[in-house]
Image (tube, rainbow, N blue to C red):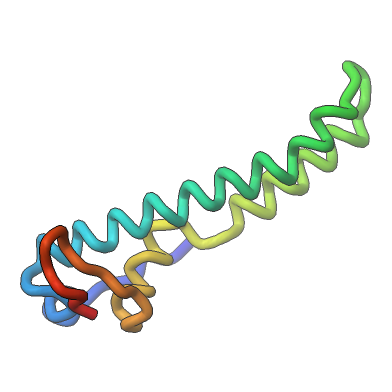
Length: 99
């Protein structure tokens, strides 16, 4: 996977400063990661429930699902793109909504 460069001035302009942009993106990244974990567990649960010790078909199904999830964009990259594309609404405790 190729490395993307990020213009820090544009990234910083989305909030009051660079560190706030990092915090907003990291919180969103955790939310995306939690949603991905939940989806993965929901898709694997029926397969694991039916699985026996020598069931190679079920192992292939688990492998295919896992491979599909590995090919997705990483949560951090998604969060940064959402912030840069102004798709995130965020606010800090005690403040009015910023974006």
